Length: 251
Image (cartoon, rainbow, N blue to C red; front, side, top):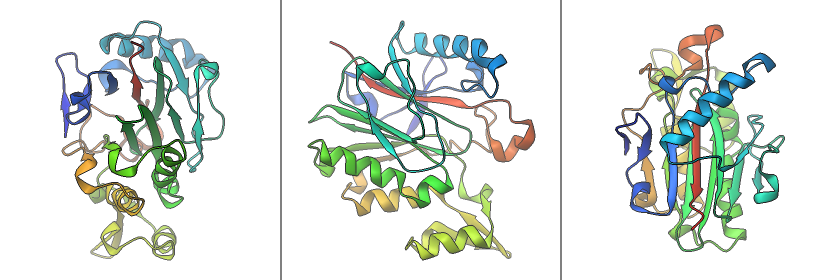
């Protein structure tokens, strides 16, 4: 379950049980986190710095990813700090003191933590990334690093709910052809709606994640609440994206 702390940062209740784990989701209150032009870089960096301070992070090692709405997952370490990873939609590390970032404005942020192997990961899953099984790929990389899926804790952050996520028949057909279950697509009065959360839950369970290990954000629809940015709500007037972060303290 998603809850907002006294500083206005949203966190997942199940993840808060791990003392060495830091994670959080920013809101519109903190401002835009992802520059869409060179002129926005300084502002977004200031916004990100302020957000990080509320998490107790002063000048942390950050790794960002150049999101391309795909399913590539990159394993990173401290040599990647400040570089940014090109053409990927997910990050994984076992390095403490390294914090992973993705940015969203309706797409689903998928956070993962293995408390046994001490590995963290994060993925950005829009409809294309979900179709290409970015969340599933994230877990498969965890497994190659020694994780047992039964140990991995999953947190699904703020995203658009299916009742606001209308898709065309072409997109719906792709999900049907890819083998997603009927619960992923909802038909209402001739319109088709895609359930991003359910589609990702389905693939996570399919790769061995127990249902009870998946913490799903409820009442955190990016379209319905103006605490979050929403591409579908704001359309061409979109003013920003929130930051989604996960990492382990360097003890």
